Length: 433
Image (tube, rainbow, N blue to C red; front, side, top):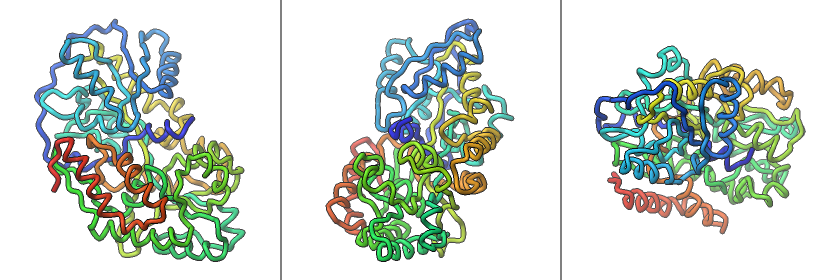
């Protein structure tokens, strides 16, 4: 398992898509069906394991896996090839593991590449997904993808260190800041988070409900980084940066892992950090890492959080074996045996229960992470748009990460960040409000 896989597993919740005015798709007209035909599944290298597991459980099904750059954030390979297949009239895969930007084109238009699943997947299955999990798949009232997993943010912390230092786990962003400043004085070198990773805005600014990009139509977005819910987070982060309580290097960098991973006291982040980051990445000993509820601002009446990840499956509207394609996508997202051993939190509710039980059975954690992760799963803020043709992660990495690494404050770079988003969106044909 690699960080890249987990990050690119990632297509985050974007329920605002369902509420934005969208171009209506025409009636779905399936291709002539051949139930005996082989299905082709396009996946990234990691997802070939899903095809292997399905093939083992269904030896009579003819299925072929083709690896491509699917899931790679910002990759345009799927779109480019589908446009080619559209011209030649052949070659489309039956099932695809896409990246989040593919939602912007594959689920819209008069004849979307992704097939509408409302009449292809049992309603009982669709109703079993965690509340909000299928919202990003929903356009014009139709469901165009099955969510594989969720990556809701919580507050990870090292319980052993917190107990040793005599600190209480914060419940608000303000408490987190104050504790971070105290840590900087009493235990310099220890960290309460980092802002040097491309996904950092998904943790801090998404959780703050900042309108970095709000979809208001197929090709219209609102970008306002001077909104109070953006500037409050910038003001919160800046003192921590100055005090040295926030890391400015990518948490997956070798140097960070070698020099700073053992000094992480707290780290807001997604559900998969427990095993993938702390256990497999940092080799933090078992019995030290615990999870607490996502942080909220004291003035907010409700807790909302962001997400760093969460993949999906498309079924091609061109498939000649929709029954087999649907069965594959349904099985890999709902089968209790397969999903319990997955690396990430299943988006299908009953599967999530089994996954959490397996996590606890691992004996790795210092507390029961189940209640916290379950409560956070439906609390992902619903207006953060990830299903745009541009990658927020790439823009943040190109603008904010170098600036923060050079000592600049977050607040001083908000206009620079805003302009970079506007420039990219405009170049891709978006109207920016």
